[in-house]
Amino acid sequence: MNILQRSLTIAAFVSASATAAFAGEQYVDETGFAVSGYDVVAYFDLPQSAIGTPQAEGVPGDASITAEYNGATFAFSTEENRDKFVANPAQFAPQFDGHCAYGVAQGGKVPANPNLWRIVDGELYLNITRNVVGFWEEDIPGNISSADGNWVSLEPTDASTRTIPQFTSEAPKS
Image 1 (tube, rainbow, N blue to C red):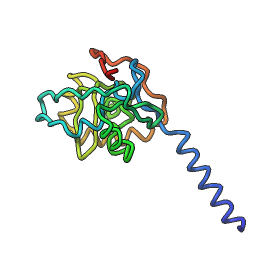
Image 2: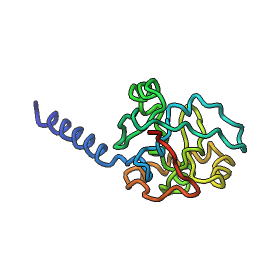
Image 3: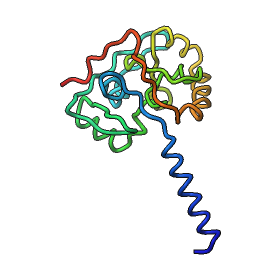
């Protein structure tokens, strides 16, 4: 291996290591579970309500049916859902490491309520409060674009440690 090849190999390794080191953490609340112990795969089977109307509540996971991803434990309502998640976790995990999508669009990491969700273009987005959902729904594509732009600098920062306002999780089931 010549010096140029060795330098490129070292640079590629350092770049990959730095990316892994700077990856953000999943939001985990007092339950100790990602998405407050709700089954992220189940959202994709729930009917979506029209913009401006509340979504169906999420499906609580089971504490005995779990998988690890992005440094957090996710709970699932069925083994089938867990297996789908394990096969492709990025397909089901909420965007922005489970933080409020509108909060990220506004430039910060804040917690998200698992019952304030929407699937857009096959991706799961969560929000913090019903009032925030209203702001989010005023311009979902614009908010996603802003959030995606902000996420580049926000992702490596620590996950929110705040409690989800106006929400108490009974998930996961035991």
